[in-house]
Length: 375
Image 1 (cartoon, rainbow, N blue to C red):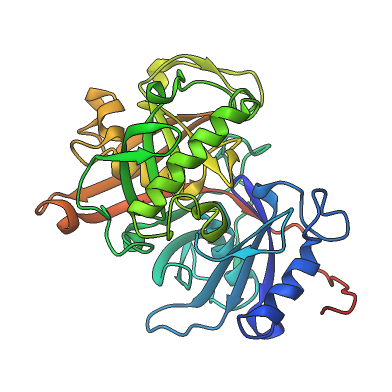
Image 2: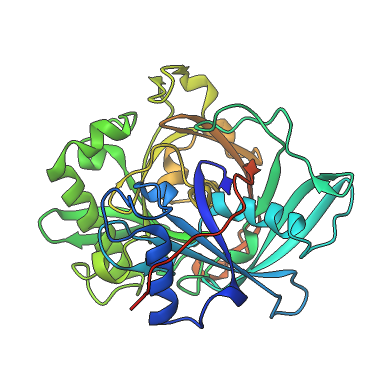
């Protein structure tokens, strides 16, 4: 299934062994990992298309399905379950209805999915007609050809899912001491997925660079990964900054933010005007630059923009601070999110009432994947 700008293999939980070595061995075989081309499996040889959704019966009260997301590594035999993919989460709602796991209710069916990754509940609103999810519509997702019906996700309940708190350190800004880089200010925010936000100018970037521009600079990528690792360690997600690459390669996600500016979208060469965005951001996922913008990053960026003193708040257009909707300029265009943060105290007492993401989804294939003997 495609969900937003990502694609995943969906498997039923009852068709797999329990979590552990045997389950991961089967999943790696399904995807054809480890292999840079994933030529002998269903993986797409890109982090955005080497994703997994395991769907099971509800195990938590007032939920409809149990959902485990897996980021299947391409060139090493590892499946990372620490993160959550917002794009694929949109497809979970559609899958649950099409598979008969959730009764279709017109005009919108709400699917409550318990995510084992974060031990939180996602609310997914899927438009429905004649007992089936609506596929055709006018909603456009930059980075996805054509248009579709808008699926709305709310990540509000996922705040603190990875670290226990929306602001893991209690601070809107922290100073990280990064080996080989020096000191750098960062905002550490945890909703959807944990994120490390830094200013583009602090790493010598304008913020409007294309993914190719960033990825071709191997020294820059190394420095950015060191910063991400330092943030992971500060948030308690890794035993050290150096160990983060192996222990938690997918999260935290690194966000590089800058004020509104003009640039050209790298996928279709369509100009993006500064007037049409409230801030500009690039994110690094699995040690390379995301070609569009991660779904969970959309929600997290929107929430971070509501926290006074954070780096994202600093970059936000001033007149957007009183609007619920925030427009984020990313490499392929503009994405919007609605966010509401309750400032009922400082640090760990911040509450999130709304953190939304609009996506489209499509079932591409039903079938059987054939496996050789798995060790």
